[in-house]
Figure 1 (cartoon, one colour):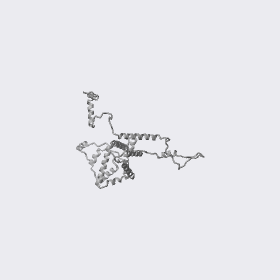
Figure 2 (cartoon, one colour):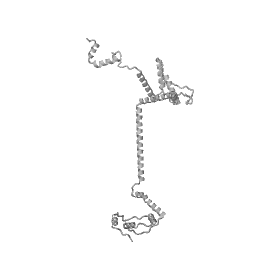
Figure 3 (cartoon, helix red, strand yellow):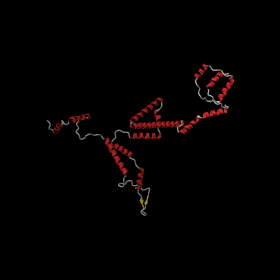
Figure 4 (cartoon, rainbow, N blue to C red):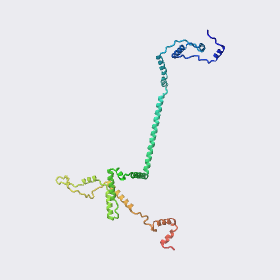
Length: 325
């Protein structure tokens, strides 16, 4: 016989929260587990089952599907395959995927880095060009800097006990050594021998002018061949070339110089005039009266003339005429 519920129990049941009208069906695994527990537990509380049954919605009894490991694995794979269908939906809607966005971002970053490197390279090139121009403009400072570096290197060599001349000669080639010897020889030849007379001065001028000449051997050989004296045969009248025939070197009045040769002569004469003009002592105002005894007195007389020339002009004219009082 079923137990009757009291009035207090009914009031407690009224104050309990109402459950959801629909329940999600449990899986076959959970149902089988609960069924097994109910069998193992034995007798259950009939009052608790009755109170629970009153608040549950009656559902139609359905046959319980048998659970097997294969069906469980199929359900898991189906549940895992659902999220993988999202990229296809994104592609169908036309929105870019995360991979495409990352690719675009990496491309933009590579372009930014390339542009920054190009700008940096241009800045360095501009700085190097400006530095080259400044160094070319300040040749004196560059020579002083090179001399300072050379002195520092020589000091370091002396501290290390290295022969400076030997170390310097290791960097010279054979051509450099021969050019240096030739330069020293020319310097020794041009060295001033002291007081010389007019004959020595004329000889030195002649040697200097000869060294300045640059003869054209091929042109002179061609001219000699053209003006060679050939023997003429009276019988045939043909020209017979004879190597033993002397060549007339004196072609007075028949030589016609080229325009280049005339220009060279004019340039040489102008150069000699300029040398004579530079060697001569400067004489300022040779026709003026000498009213000074030295250079400082000449400057002082110029100052007096600049300030008092107008006032003393009449007195000086009277002194020149001899009519001064």
